[in-house]
Image (cartoon, rainbow, N blue to C red):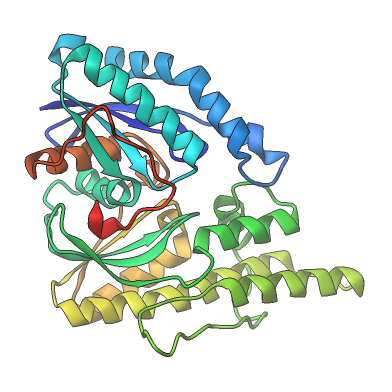
Length: 336
């Protein structure tokens, strides 16, 4: 089954052609990072306008690079939630037009389900069930992946997503946007014990997380150093911040893995590229006897290949949409 997949949930426009949920025939991404860097974050109106400008040509490019003809496409898949509503609407509306023109099924895909499916591309032998840590700019959740289309959130952030914290701290430090990669590079060789930052604990739900306190404490530390004209060891601060984030995430996902007993742990989303989190999870999985599945770095960020991969399983489960498909800014992963 050959699927044309479209992703436009935030600031990257992406199109891909995927075969049978595991084989990527093409994967094209048009990044908007340079457009939003000056603002230190994504400007929704700018993102939506640029999606409109590039989406048609990008889909054409994806089909051409796949080596297929238009009449060889069996379905069109698209991210329909969650995301910036204007941005998601661009992809949904284009996908509806493409499916109608090609006379093929339209398959709606939840963005976070797509991130989880990125692991199927990197690890063709991976099959559910497994526990997945989903960490990105908009999502922080521990998900019980019971089957390809049956999922349940075991724990999630009560406030900020971990990727958002990386972005805001990096913006205040003036080291670039998005913040994950610059913070990762800055932490290299830094003393991760130099700065002590808070670890939040949610009492009523042991697998839930909170990062607003960490973000506030980090910003206060930076501003206090500036006001007192005291030097801030940037490498040590970035390393300490990364250690604290990892210490919040890893024990909880390992606790979830122990509860389920699947013996498999996966990670998904843009923050899955973070070296400290990957290393700490690998050590924890080795110690507990769990297998760890990490997506290739190229599939950690937003891309359409992951949407095409998940769409194959959504189609097999009978999940299709009509031309009345709408876009949603928020949507529970369990509902698809």
